[in-house]
Amino acid sequence: MKEYSAPIDEEQLTARIREIGFSCTMCGECCRPGAGDDNLVMVSPGEIRRISSLCHLRAEECAEPYPEHVKLSDGTEVTFGWAVRRVAGDCIFYRDGSCQVYAERPWICRTYPFMLDGEDLLTSPCPGLGRPIGWEEARAMARALRARRAAEEEEGEKIRRAISARLPREKGCLVIDGEGVTRV
Ligand code: SF4
Image (cartoon, rainbow, N blue to C red; front, side):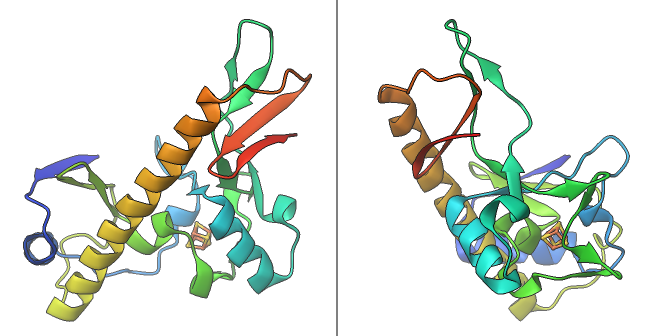
């Protein structure tokens, strides 16, 4: 992942995205595991609901528990959130070269290959980087990045609150997300 230091107000972020350049080549590489990157797409409960309603699938058919688990001292396993379900590493919604849930694709997909880490703009490897991007498109990406960061911060805060509350002591794995605890 490449890092660009950037003061992140919308105008400056738009200008930075213009300088870096990006245009999607429709290669689908971000929907499949790439070299050294599993391209896992984390999703919030709200995103799962929207995708589920769009494609008429149950929530558990759209998303799976985030695969990295932590074992607590009493043996309870926990994980923090959900990822879009995959089959043989590919996102289940990537079919025939396109995204089947494009209108409701998660923030990570909307903003790929960019992400904000605090005030820093990061990019993931992508063949679309370096291609010309217009002001309006760059501004839309800047807005999406800022909205994504706000949504992730809010979800993170809710997860921290859920962790600090007493967790149920149950066998199996607990998924802690911004809406509470689910046993899977
Ligand atoms: S949800 Fe759509 S854009 Fe995101 S990884 Fe899956 S197929 Fe690709």
